[in-house]
Length: 315
Image (cartoon, rainbow, N blue to C red; front, side, top):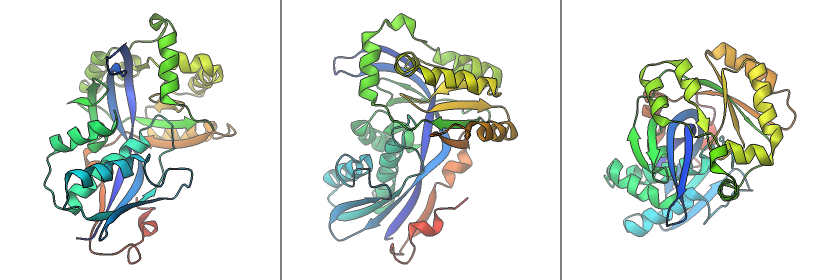
């Protein structure tokens, strides 16, 4: 085989509690991850030697600093049989939005190289490599539903629960995760929401949307909303538009507005698209079937013979 094309799915944190700072400088987290049906397309093609990356957004690193590139470099260092690879990325997940777009791309690079070069690595081995790259990368290897602890890389699978329909609304600016955690450290942590992951897990197990909505929470909302109070106001506006719950995604600034049914979510999206400068995306939670269909192509065609753009609109 010469080439593989994969979907790299993003995520949201249904709960995100930030605890004390660890000796290595990271914070201890307790979070319930849930994969979402929003994905980048990642193409990996064998080449005789070297590592190159091409993204459709020129504001993204096209080499070191791009997590997909860093993931491939890590694999090449560990496995000399990986002679070379060219990576192409088509971004559909907004950048620096709290949706794990970069982590998803890195996870796809790990998975893709394992398949492309027939390394036969276990999921546990890939998770160990993923933890070297970032806190969310391990979950993005199989982004269904999990409790994340440690930095978020210690995973315990949980029941994915009922279908969750949501509208993602991202303002025109991006946030630095490091800056948000710095603000969190400087404030009184007691002022933040500290959601109970166990309550969320019970809601998922019980297929209880009401319980799920009540259990949602994100400790990082407090510092973000203090810096950008109009994000909190938009959250209140989305509730007035009919959202069942509104939650900031990860370290922000994206807001996720939840709906019980697809039709309700479409109505929300229609209202929210009137907000100038916001990126508004309708999506839903990920299913096992979605994950089973995450590999779009595996075979011998070259980039020229089977360009990634030809399948960009798949589904």
